[in-house]
Image 1: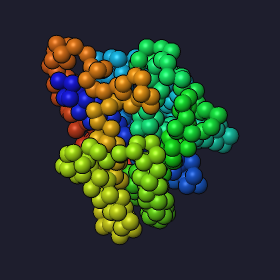
Image 2: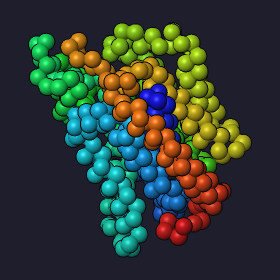
Image 3: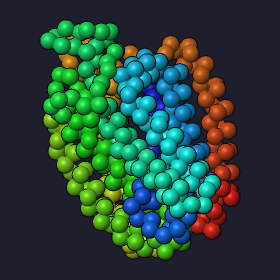
Length: 358
């Protein structure tokens, strides 16, 4: 049952990355590329009916984490307390930026909330990439110093950064050069993803410009991916050991690079949704590749005193996991019905539907 709930949790997080990822990307596009009121309206219309429903996947993932892996929930929510609070405030500012922007028709008022929406979207993309970097790199479980564990084996706490800004230091920070690299990858990838969603859901004048932006950013993304793979050996001496032991896992990197290289043809796609499909493949494949590379670990330990947290030593009792399956099936059916109705109602282009008129 541990493996089942792990797949469920990772699946829900992957869906969140894809769905709320295009919201973050649309916000970044709004910040840097939307120069006219018409462009801004097209962007907010493209995500208007979807963004709040997309965020539910993050809440639901937290619920599954609390239910199925309570030790991991307790450990990560205390250890990452500071960045989690920052993410919460960024989510709030992003939401109120969308909601309050149209309440007063004043240029200064609109400009302030435009910036709140765009900057919070940018920082959220960065922080979620940094969060993934922390999981890949691991943390100092038990806060071991000089070979002695100062706390329980699953406890840790990280400041925003350490004096050395190094991912191999004894006392780690949330942000170092490795996690920041993954954060930048997150920003670039979600900008591409958001641009593809806008192209898919609107006929805005901005779309031709966005296709060029996606094409150019894809070179940046490819370069960053190559660099991350090269420096991964510094963090994990044998980063591909799971793929060697289970060759079928190579399907995930294949999906990743299929989506990545497909995006180089974004200017030649005949259907607007093809670019979004490619960026979705990249995000799903990249997330699955990362998860598969550290399995069965869910939070690696950077010291030799306390073991890494795995799906087996942080899971709830098997009885609870089994009982929860019945409720999960009911919830899954309701969620599928909701999303099918939502995407059928709001299918097609959205630029003529003003935000707040959905």
